[in-house]
Image 1 (tube, rainbow, N blue to C red):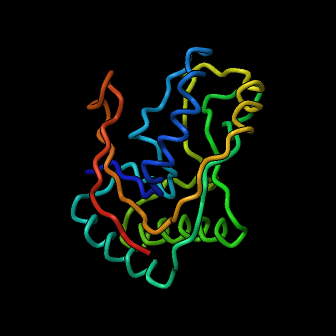
Image 2 (image 1 turned 45 degrees about the horizontal axis):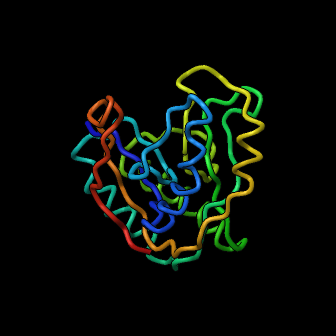
Length: 188
């Protein structure tokens, strides 16, 4: 079994820009900060993928995305889960032209549908585009000041031209964080 997610992985310059914005601010709160190499926008999460279903999923996904054209996105603004008064996750949102954001939503639907059509169970949470930048470590926290700060962030735009499938190996990264392994990339 493989723990897998389909994601949009921003290019290094977008991640570096966000990381540079966050770096001087990280000491202001006792949060578990996401390492730059783990920043991504999850389109679909699959907790248990039988290895034999991985290749059919990649093929089904490629077919389902072949009529889509690349678009432009950027990272901007604050997102918190579940809400600002008792947040556990601090994130940056995605922005772009309305058609580009529609494409992002279409990618989420198609990555999930391709998984189901390949016999893979998908986490059913509603898609809300975001890049997680920090977690509270389990205890909820009031994050109004962080929301105000991240609402001032606007990153550079970049072409969204692929979906990346990533295996997540729990506890194998630094300080027992997940280790991510790219298993496939599907171009638009």
